[in-house]
Length: 79
Image 1 (tube, rainbow, N blue to C red):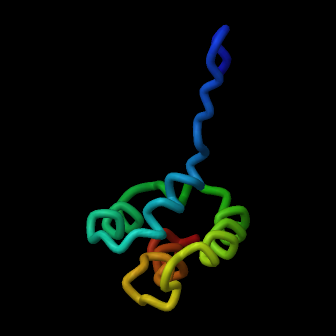
Image 2 (cartoon, rainbow, N blue to C red):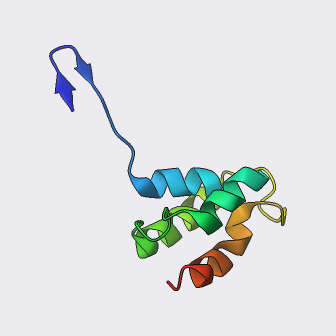
Image 3 (tube, rainbow, N blue to C red):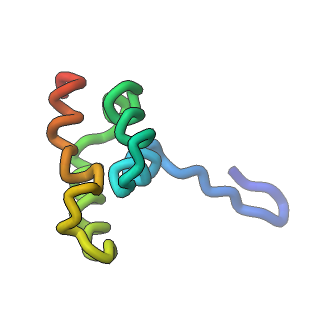
């Protein structure tokens, strides 16, 4: 979106999904399981984004991060 003095960038649904995947909150996990966020995402792009952003997580081995269950969420939605 463009305004005369302002550029507004609207993030894609993949960034919204990514914010939930890199969370440890129960609510975000529920959203990944119960909403259509992943069904409407470009999965190959999301996989690349997860791989790219893992390098910036303080402890990517922390199993509480929702991205560790990514394939389970896909399976729930039949993806």
